[in-house]
Length: 178
Image (cartoon, rainbow, N blue to C red; front, side, top):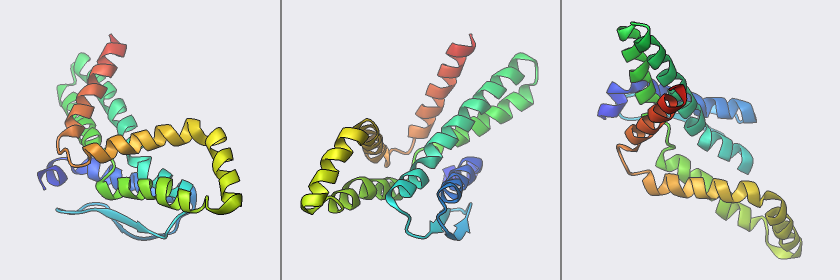
């Protein structure tokens, strides 16, 4: 619960990322709760497989990107003497990075799309041909996304993984900046 209170901008951005994923894919949103002491969510219609992947993974990419931008701005302000602004941007960066990782429900939705729904569509003779063609053409996309979801699933219960992610982003920016 402390992370919802102390790092609330990351929670809000996480949910806005899901909302942007819904808008981008044309998925109708039925209910929005951007922040609360215990939960936040975006409820939506059942989307297609590609749309579900976009919606599920949007927070990782959007939160990580804005975290990197916030670290860069924090560095810029600190080097120019704006300590207050620098610390504000570092707090935002930590908040965004901490909530970048998809929730357990987001990961499960992604796995369902890539495994159960995908394999059930590939049944029968026609499905076998589609299965082979899809592996030939989509393996460069399918396998990395499956590996990414597997990593998210393994670490979905690690509370402080977002802090590690923030540190990696910050050191990456510092390394490039120097």
